[in-house]
Length: 228
Image 1 (cartoon, rainbow, N blue to C red):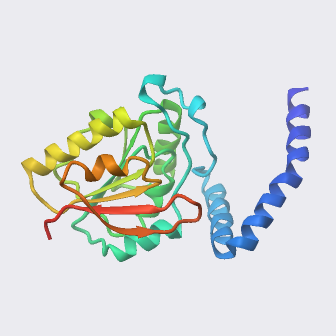
Image 2: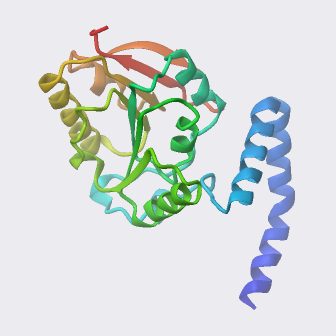
């Protein structure tokens, strides 16, 4: 009975899903085809990064102000990374990496090391499984509170897609600033849906240097320290 109910509900939702895909295709045909091809490729490889996970389903305590999880790995992120001229001397950490969609896209670029931080146990396990199935040796997924991760001295790129609330963001920024003071260097922050823009620039270390449009209303803000 449960299986029959699921099939019935899925069929009922199909026209709505097809309508959304059609609207997206008409407004952003290149992005829509890219997304469909990426979903197909993921299915062929037995992985999944695209499905949205609501904040209430993450299993993260409410005091950590959990934010819904969805993938941002697409050509809009690729445009940003291409313009930043990533080299094999660069490393990046994705705070709140979700299922690893953005991380797998970052792997198209010559980063020496890619680290994903994810606090949700279920999402972390999915990300870990995805990376293992894709046999990525330079990617590490870590299960922890992002505000506690401070092994940043060898990292010069930081990525975030509005992954958590203000309290966690403050602790993440404290760790970034501590690392910068101990090892002054050029650090780039790539921040999609920059809810806490003021929190970043108010501390006087980072300056917003660029802004990029994305597939949705949430733009990328790019920040840099002043060291060249």
